[in-house]
Length: 279
Ligand SMILES: [Zn+2]
Image (cartoon, rainbow, N blue to C red; front, side, top):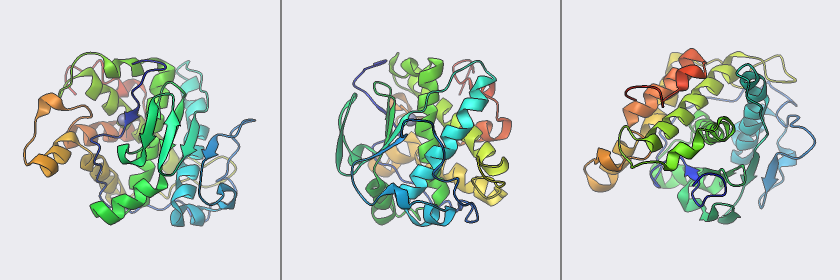
């Protein structure tokens, strides 16, 4: 794969079930939601209501597109300063909100593949209908943190594109300890780093964090969301058994472990899943 390759990096499984994680975006946080992401617009929208009407944390709690937008802006405000300390420059990826299907450098995609990041065009793709489908078809409560975790995971792949580890996703075979799984777990770990920041540091242009402070229950919910997209959970639901040799994203336990590692340490080096003897 690599740059310009045909394969995007999704969340996992093809069937994604997110279990309820109720965590609100701070409703008192005004104005900073739209963010300042530089000269070029960081968000593209091919359909739907205008994102310009996303103004408050309350909007983000009520509307999926606003929640994706707010989360993307929080991620774009966090990663540059954080990565600078590690000598890594940050470029803002484009966040594409689409409906139905979309043409990308990784090929044509529909919302059925779930959210994904395409290294070939540096864009993260999200279909709000897909999130809605999770609630209606898969029984997810549609909790905000579950969706924010999804956005943060795809941005984790963008960070990997910047640091150069993303190409490992297509090297070697699949399986529990494969490079593919380690790539996905690292993206989960990066999502955890952002969760730590977004719930504890003031958002740009605001005196308050983007997310309300996480309680142990919130954290458990986030871990539950990560767990629900584990390969073993998805395989078990689909076929009644699990086959670790075919895993591409990691088990529920692995995904929980690495999301938590990122959240707990907030340390990029601690997310080096490639150096870990066992993930
Ligand atoms: Zn992924």
